[in-house]
Length: 149
Image (cartoon, rainbow, N blue to C red; front, side):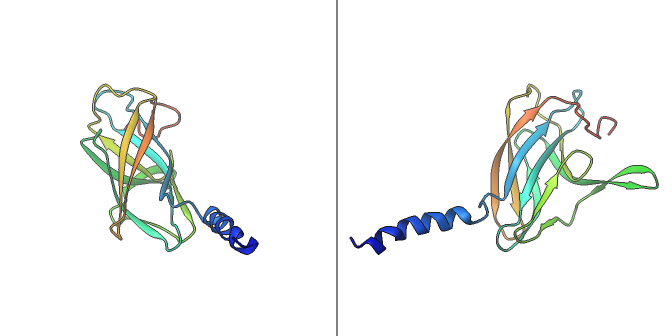
């Protein structure tokens, strides 16, 4: 093998490493409900990838239903608005779902989940792409804005 040919595999590996991670979702956690019958919440970071993508839904076998919401300050009051038209993530950009901002509400959470458990989340994007992510369950509290929801 010539010296030039031996560098080709290294260059291909380096090129692959320099690209943005292919995973559309990272840093997923689920905040468990404070009381039985209350909703939990999912937080994560969405990545737009090379072309951008739009999240249209998130589901979980650990919840009866899910809803995407955004918290905003309006006239000194926090208001929660459903995100019914999806969430666009720009190319090479990211959108964070976090406490006090965008989040996914998990209603009718299966009993028995405890801090440290893995909660499966399924993300569906407008281009038909899906991603299955295992989120770590966290104890309730910690600044969650939904204790009165």
